[in-house]
Image (cartoon, rainbow, N blue to C red; front, side, top):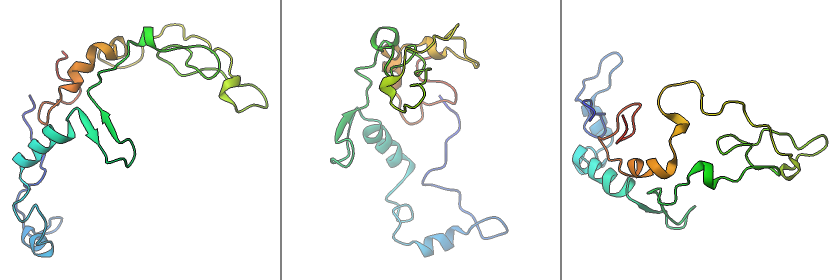
Length: 158
């Protein structure tokens, strides 16, 4: 559990000085702000984040996606569920198509099957990386709540 809380809607009160704003001036300039009116508090924001922003189903009212579920319920097992090959498909389940459609063509369907990298899975960095399957880790990621996130770690991982 993180020990540091990010300031959201309850900032430290400040007075005008070089490099600092005045809380009183901001409240005077924006008197109807829900922050200054006390309608938004850290507790309210945390509850909003956990109940609505991190909820399973999101509905944007048909603006872009309509209703969709972010719980990763249909997460793939990469090695089994990703189709590879020619015609613009990935070269491996973990890499994009590594071939060119050829001279005179910009059509991905003209791409031949790409070369396979010699040693996939040994990318630079730390952690388990591509060794994790979305079908295995999706439940951990779907369990995120405000305050449970730690830099560099997903909930439920070591």
